[in-house]
Image 1 (spheres, rainbow, N blue to C red):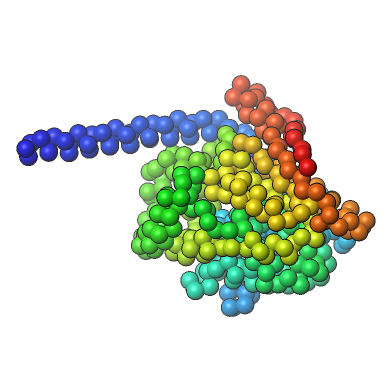
Image 2: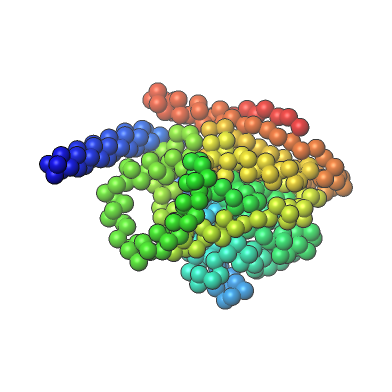
Length: 396
């Protein structure tokens, strides 16, 4: 009997080894395919030098890293665009939008949320969405204390914007011209499902923080492990961040962003995100131009989360992008840039003509990034990609 058990154990080990090898081979092939698409990366890369950098002091004394870009021919009547990044990211995730917005003539303010990017590491007691809202208020006070502003938030950055509206409604009422919610949610339920159902979501919510906390002291050993399993890491990042072919350069940029976040910070924010509930707060925005965008293939904040936001906001616009995942601003940058600029134009026209936003009909559109598809096909065919065009289906 012992011999049978030993044989079964060896068989199971062999099967596991074979499965791991097969996964490794698949990851290697996927990485090779992504490397073929490196020519799609922006000509200027993913690095950016800000016009101005500063530290903003939060309400608890923490230093927040802030960057500002200003066009040389700034129109003071235009709103300042304030960009808030998502969980496990940094202001670097907005690199493609910040360039385009400045080129379009807008002043841009970006900040690293506490314990992310170059901002200081917070004590765990202050890692909450409410504190992020007060942080955003401090950033606005320091960088654009007067004049119109537009708030653009991705994922947790969108949640920060909602919490800001609850804690500082007078700021939103008096100065916010428009709001864009990118790949975000007004409630935390289901945000850890990862597209695999509520059982997985509950398991991650219960076990994830404890596991990350235990791993935190050993995070410094992660770098050599990452190098060893780089292709497998890339496949995981690709799976949960994107829903269309992307380059290996973008995958590496994304992985570095995500894994620069400390494990104990991840652990602390998971329950904060799950407890997020700002559906009622959205009424504060009923007279503002609001854009809600998400990817149809987003596993973290699928379209149902965006629908709940739109249902609370008459006159809002909901754009669903096909073949797009959670990091849509990096996957389809021209679409996000174009949609935000169109939002600002609508807001400026409505303000000039005294149009009531709440009296306007909701608009729902599905957009297909035909330009990216063409560029990918040309690269795969050994040609140079050129030209951009987006086709949309609109209904109101």
